[in-house]
Image 1 (cartoon, helix red, strand yellow):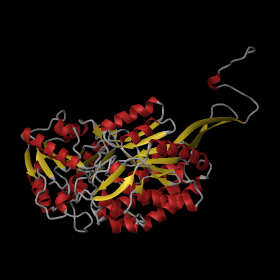
Image 2: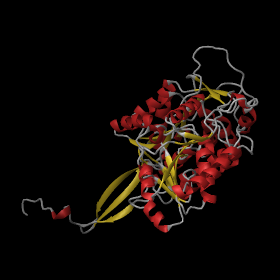
Image 3: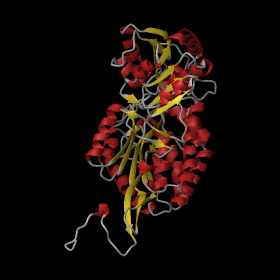
Length: 538
């Protein structure tokens, strides 16, 4: 996943301001957000904001959607204090009652699902169906956690000592800070908030400064539910802002756990900082995901899946397909089919139902795309599709960040080469050719990242090898399913430099609690473990 690259203007003087886009008004009005004035970007039970002004820029047109007043240092300090106090209240609310609050949050989100999805498309740039799908992820994890709130169990462990029992007990952790990235401005917070609230924690959200509108809209919905249930609003606080806000949160000893989604570079800094003060840290970092296609693969399934994995969200998912390893026997047919799909793609307004390709999120991302293509060309790679920005698009798309999805075939596969080793957060797919599955697995595992991976085969022997100890070392190991698009039921996360973090389903909830081993003696004796005798009369 990418670090939150800023494309907002931090307005500290009084330059000439561009008029606000009219595109945003219907979407924001449907979410009860008035965009005519500066929007408050801080919530801790009350709305405020007196820091820098952040301009939300539409990646489709380059227009300013709204202006948000971010958190000042003093407001951040206050939000941290209020969140800690809110935690002291919320930790004593029974877990099933917390689940009921999450059920109400789920209902409130579902009532505004399409409107929130449109806002994601407008501000982040992903197409409408993906924007709505992202909100659905938040709804789904809230559904999941309603039941989980009654099943966040410890366990009883047999004791070797007569008249003793050992309990492993989970209790609320404290204040959880969620630092989310631009590419999933709703879902990632949803995964974290749902588990954190069910566990009895307070949560402080610092979103990407480039998707502040999404965070404000979501927080308005959640805060209304908390208010109706007489729960302090600071149980789910929001602080928008730039780098200094995130840095202060990560360094704060008031924050018991930091969940960070972003680049490997920033993730290393976050990890070291939080661990230096002995806080808990959950990292979701780079992807660089590979698909492997065997000669017995069903290409009618594999080709569309790779197409979506590489082109969906304009290549800006943490699970986007970056590398494609084709068995020599299927290279020609697979690439012929894939190129036809690439040729059919046209850029468009993400809010239009027919659009499959939206913009990159920022101008900086366009530069990253162009630099990656230039490196490939310099290395002698064959460009089969794309390789350039879109030019001469009709207004208003001519102001957007549109690039052509690219298929490149480097001269050879060398996972020590930056072409294969480094993730490009854009729609650039590199293709390599292999002869044996073991070779492809070695290439899959040979990069620093380990998020998602995919094998296309109908041979059970290949499946066993792929998911076993000598198979993929990624956190997500799929068979006949693409790298992109995970469900909430299983824990989501990656290994190696992806960060080892786990969010969403499975056992991910266990990271949001503190664990205690409690030995209880209900006998009339006090024996020591391991038969130790410590008595002068022994």
